[in-house]
Image 1: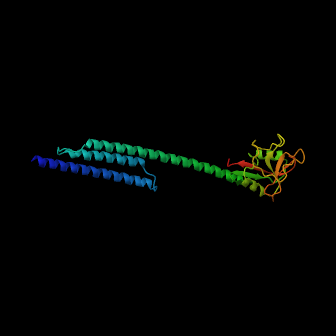
Image 2 (image 1 turned 45 degrees about the vertical axis):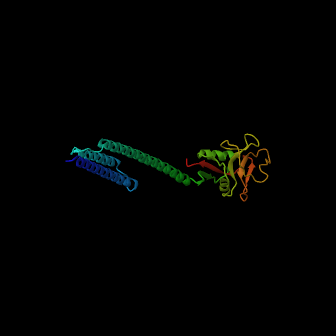
Image 3 (image 1 turned 180 degrees about the vertical axis):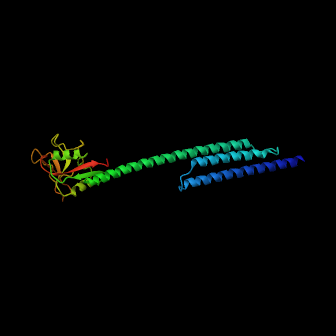
Length: 254
């Protein structure tokens, strides 16, 4: 056999080896793509352990096939380097799949926790509704059917796990006006004359006083009621011992 003929055969064999190697790699890539396509479709939760096992077996089979190509003794490509690269790619894929499984488990855990929280909130909503509370803008409100003094009204709210209503927005102001009855709210200047504070200790910001109010018509007008519901601004200061209905507010669901 002439040197030229031997060289041609070696080149041809090398081409066959490389071509077969590429076919094997393409087959492995196709298998991986099919597994990942099934996973990403969302049709069914993937069996990640089975996928890892299949990919490992395919990698080992690919090693054996590539190693068997040295039977003729001809010069071959750097198959060790090819095998090393494929092994590293397989290990990287394993790590990615394990990471995906961990993320999947974390998603399930978060969804389970959210479901439990929603169930508690729904239960609280139903229970409070059955006890005469109304839900509005993230809070529950209770409207009394009888009249008491401001302090007695507040004590009733506290016994219900709430306090007298604090009005923080125009929407809440309109909500309180809809009941069309004189009602106590949680605003007073009993601690210091002229310094109005809500029952949670915060200072009065935006206010909705009736024109001319607060006027302290007598020295004892230290508590605030919703009055004259036909007007947009309808707060009025009156003596705390007067008898009024009241509105309790409970930020919720608790």
